[in-house]
Length: 143
Image (cartoon, rainbow, N blue to C red; front, side):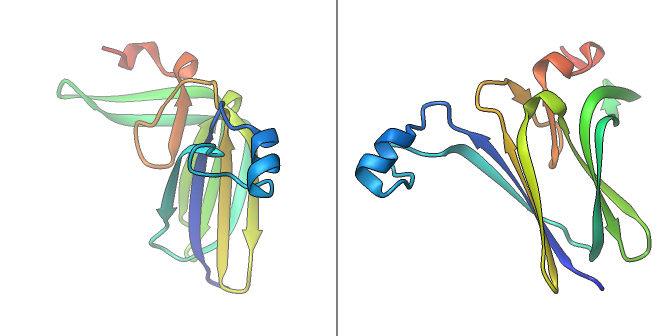
């Protein structure tokens, strides 16, 4: 069965007050008391049949810097393999230290991946769907 896949990454808000939300907004967030600092929503353009999760894995970041090709392995990653209808794999990944929790919801014609990122951990987002903690980012690519 082929499904449309949407991935959402939420950066949690350190200043969110559950007590304030409970007292004034029936436990829900409000304009001045947001649960998330930001949200990235990625609609996958190919049909997806499943999502595989690799704990404590590696992700290889590739690209070009100063006209030279590079390939750097980043350790301690949580990798989500979105498996396509033809067996192709689209990867999304987060430094393990960033991930507060995640959930995968499957329906008859959809898969939703929701990833909740720690509020206090600094990160970089070099390409859509890739979130690397500053402490894990390859030093050779800085500067």
